[in-house]
Amino acid sequence: MNEKLTRLWATKTKDDEWWSSFVTSPLAIAANYVAVEIKWLTPNRVTFLSFIIAIASAICIVRGGNANFVTAAILIHISHVLDCMDGQMARYHKTSSASGSYFDRLTDQIQVTLWFGAAGYAAYAQTQDVLPLGLAFVGVSFYSLRGYAKYVAIQTEMSRDSAYLSKIANKQTSPDRAGLAFSAMENVQWFIAEQKKILRFDEGVFIFMLSLALMLDQLTPMLWVFAASQVFYGLYRTWRHGLEIEQRPKSLIQK
Image 1 (cartoon, rainbow, N blue to C red):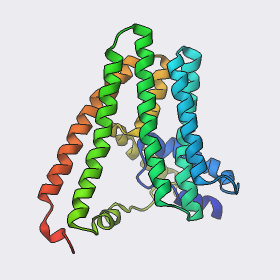
Image 2 (image 1 turned 90 degrees about the vertical axis):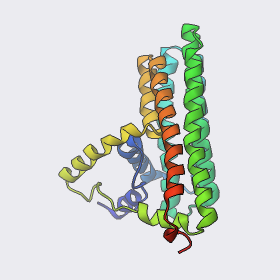
Image 3 (image 1 turned 180 degrees about the horizontal axis):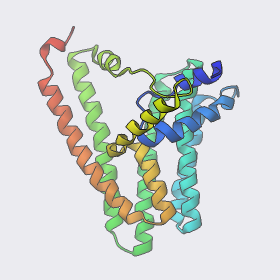
């Protein structure tokens, strides 16, 4: 594997989300092989382009019809590839910034809201039934709860242990288990192990799930899965964060 590709692979998030892990993130690495040499193409501009394409995909969903749905599915994937590219590009050039990370995460949250809000409206327009709108609202609300509970937990932990983020970052560091430097069997084993991540129902799963529903024109069943999974994970993660805060040994605080 040549040096440039090795450096690019090293920028891939180690514990990436399901679809991102073996589809959109590798595609982003391939695109970045050329893109990182384009001087005017900065990570923040890639983030902005990803967001604009996400908005365009949501507009296609709202407009409805098979052609628009297929176009939206393609645009969603392009947006997500770009969403992977910006972080990889910043790490490759060693220009990662707090503001860049902030806007990347913020646009991610807005995109999920736009996509599923648009899907709820499109399903309503097809059926004249308000149920899809309710499912989209519930799903987006509890997906937001997952993120809110996480950041409240982090803020709570930081208030009593200023080194908390450093400690969990060290625990989460893991070595590469796949790539061009590994054997075919090791890559197959890694791919199989990655499949359990589909049960996390996070953004990486949404990309696949929403795109497939658009291609098959099956929005309402997808919205049921989205709403049910986010209610479960929203409540479960909130409970888990609270339990971990309550049970964290005092010996781990202010060390």
